[in-house]
Amino acid sequence: MKRLVAVLVVFAFVTGGAFAVDISAEVIGGVRVLQGTTSDLDDEIRATGSVGRLRLEASGSSADDTFGGWIRFEGHLFNQGRADWDPLYVQGYGWWQPHRMFWFALGSHGDSFFERSGLSAWDFYRVAGNVGIVDPGNAWADGYGPGWLVFYNAFYGGFEDWGTMITIRPIPELALNFGIPFITMNTEPIDFIMLSAHAQAVFYQGWGSVALTYVGGGDPGGDNDGSIFAHLNLRAVDNLELDFGVGFNMEGADPEIGIGLAAQYTISSEFGIRARTLFHLNTADYSNNGFLFDVLPFFTLMPNITIFCSLGIALDLPDQGDSVFDWHFNPYVEIGAEWGARFFAGFRIWSVGGAADGHINWAVPIGIRVGL
Image 1: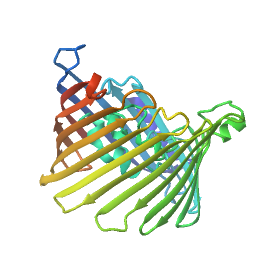
Image 2: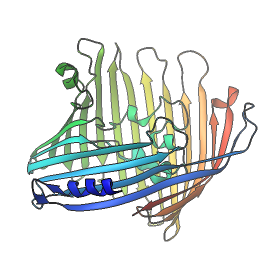
Image 3: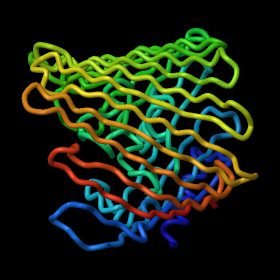
Image 4: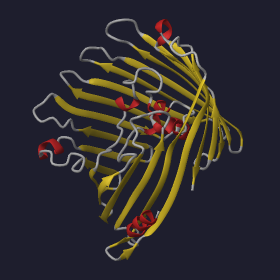
């Protein structure tokens, strides 16, 4: 603890000038008090749980907002059994902005820079995905259906590497963003590093924004020409937010194309609905073609109590063999302020592998999110 306090104290001072520092903490976890399956391979009723996030963050800037930084310490306990998450890691970056037209940062952010996914990814289910009320993977659309069918096929997921980040704003309406993985690709040839960079242009208007992003393939002389993402966000209609994305993965002779649409319409202060859909086409061999659709109506029963009901389908259309149709049904309740402390409880039932050769899983999850 003494070392952690020392780190935060050092973080609060730079070049002899004191920063205004904000420190916050967050705990997110959940359990499936019951879970089961119709598969012949497992006839037991089981339970599981995790603390998917133990997080401490600090951020601050100098009095003249010329320098600043952010640091995050985060740990996970099991995290719903996902082995791809590190049990403990640190993220952070420092930034310099000598003028409103230029911003420079060095480091990394665990939630990425410059993401343009709108409502299609995490923001669809929000914290309900973190606590396991919905499948954590389904926040990014791979919880139900084939794992390769994800909304980041159509929407830009952001720059997640360790490196340098730059934003140039020649006019207030235009942002030119760059991410270069100097640290992640440490000691690699400079041409590999530069060809792995991300470059983005975002044009902002009162009705929304338009973005075009290029992600380098990092393969000089090879057959990976990277990916291109186009994103349109519309907010011109009252109570309606809409995101449209198209992604081209240009690896190989023919691109893989993702087309996605996500929207939220708030009908009244008590009722609203979110929906998202994705089409994916592999033009090289037509082996990975598919379709996703999720709908999430929500109803405010009383202040700080909101009921959600997630319904969705996933369709896998292989080049050879039978198509696979999967579905999920996932009602749940959220108690607490939307961006504050909350308790969740729900029920999940979903198919795996289609109707012909697959099975059905079910679970009764509860979860909690507390921010300090």
